Length: 261
Ligand code: IPE
Ligand code: IPE
Ligand code: MG
Image (cartoon, rainbow, N blue to C red; front, side):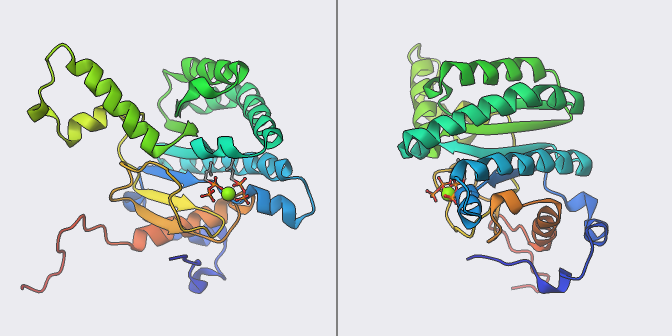
């Protein structure tokens, strides 16, 4: 179900909204399906790539808000396995943008103490994009203010397939018996290991689906859908998402009622 930000917060300024946040209730890990770039551009009579370009500014802002609030992990869906089915022209423009982002943003990520990681089948990306991604991963590997994970050529089902393949490979020598396979072991084989599961997933643009993102990891994540298009998703929008998250009761299947049954 799509949620629109509560109208009772409409009149509040960004600093009022920030003041309403409860620091101990902030998510540790936020995941984002950054959707709606194309529509943002089309609404302005611009080519779709203009929306992707503007979306980079939202990414930049999101990173600095997370750092400011002390959120330790941000995972963003930048290019899905299914996105390979888009027109070649859009794919190459997106790859160009990725290279541009990585080559120009590296210095700033390092300065901010952000560790950069990628998840997905990176080998499918053009060599130059792979080069920049690997270089940025290496150069930021020692940083620990925040982990920024970018999903590229990523599919949640493919991640599970890759985990099973690797596990079976490791089982060949007989050290992993079927009885030893449990959720914790499978988790170790996922691309995201050792990150904790996301506490909050934000999807922009009004779509209310997961689109093959983090299928295993989202099992108990709080979902937040907003009609705002990704290039328009800035500080205020993020604060509204966090305030909504803080209202949720995360039960994980348990009963929290004080009334005895
Ligand atoms: C999300 O925006 C970015 C990527 C999938 C790369 P879209 O390009 O999907 O934008 P819409 O959904 O068509 O508006
Ligand atoms: C999901 O958006 C993928 C990314 C944001 C990278 P899409 O626009 O590709 O998803 P669908 O096609 O609407 O499900
Ligand atoms: Mg889309």
